[in-house]
Length: 309
Image (spheres, one colour):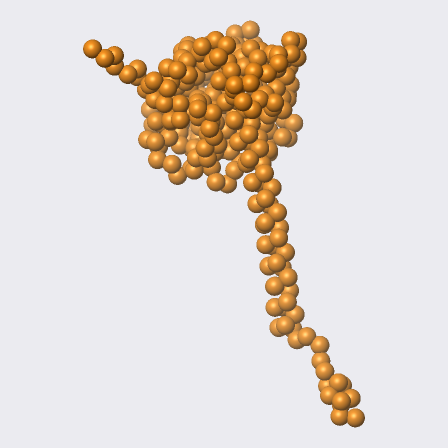
């Protein structure tokens, strides 16, 4: 009888207990979701690093074939005629190696079997797009590209490994700066294909000369272009070239109307920074807080060592 009376006096959870239980379950669910998101981003980060590493192998193979890195012609103007365009560095690599993509390249000591006639046209290419670059995956452009070659540390782009009009070999880079201190490629976000939209992944087109202190904050929406990274095929600051005149994630980026000079910085969809391919084939993650002087040093190929007398 006593047991029945005690059992009858039992009650359910109080409102406070329900709230506490709800908070605990929600927190556990949030931690699970965050863990899954972190794991997915880590996988994307590693995939993007692998893409850059394969570009590094292609550069080493190109240097073996020609005893120099790909030489680039003058960068094209945005919206200029196709006939006036020079091929971009990735197009040169594919055509020289005669490969449809670079995804099978892992070791510069093992030359791939060439496949004549397999070099793609201006279409999406596996390994040229980073999984953390949402606009590159959105199908906005026929041949998107998330990776760019460095031209130098200034808007003129005249002192980097891929400065237009310059040819240099890996041996010369090693003698001047060391391959492990010299940048080759980095990431940059693809644009949103909208004109007049001043977004971090877009850029301005302004009359030359570009100001010394960086891009102006233009009030004219018509100066903004959204076709950044729209094609891996051509040599231009619109898609395949960048420089270290801006710190990573520096904003805004801008391009002179003649296409010759730019403040075109590196950027990515990674939370922790941008991947940077060095000419020794290694890939390092650079944080946005990097000292601008150090960032610019990565982009320059130093002067030749003085000859011994």
